[in-house]
Image (cartoon, rainbow, N blue to C red; front, side, top):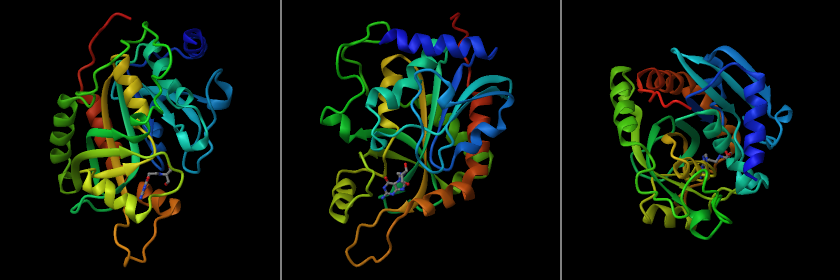
Length: 284
Ligand SMILES: Nc1nc2ncn(CCNC(CO)CO)c2c(=O)[nH]1
């Protein structure tokens, strides 16, 4: 289905003059990142051949091209999740399209619940690494015949979150005065759509996971496979319930609320990161 990716890339290339080097995937309640793009060309997912549809509140369903600090970007306002019933090929379809458009760096953002003590709602966690639970049991976007045009049959995943970008992001956070609520940690993907049980939360915590969500890992696996540089961040929207005495329970509205609260800080961090990252002038 390589030509499906190519067909979508060709359709987009014929509908916008923008040739992006950076792609951004906006997580729940973080769609405002696209609003800061200048000279926008925006397309509803429903108008883009081969694109799945967004069905989750807080995920608009628009692909926005534009300029950010002089760098051409493409931004997904709304991502696709396995829990929506999309195949993993579909949830990660845009990543390979971005590769064919000439994108070199992928920035993924998501909302996540925190398991680690010392992580609080409103914190921004730079993703150092992930545990891809669905992938570990074979629910993996790379399953099936390998497409050698994109990458190797057995891709390494030991350095998929670019260290240089993580250091740059932390420096920027210090300069922007937001280091106080910056964290760095391990993100775990669970399938969802239900939130975890207490026993599952305690298991994840025991395994050294710092934050948990229902996305991101498949997109990063596909991005690493085709050689994109990746930076990820999780907006911590709630503390995961780990105690049977705790009456608090999590809900999606609360997740979106924290997104609104921190949207400015996330936007400023990502914008400055994009303006400061070097773009390799690979001739596409
Ligand atoms: N305990 C827990 N708290 C969370 N807060 C946000 N997310 C990320 C999942 N976001 C869903 C539901 O808000 C929408 O994609 C989670 C999660 O997966 N588990």
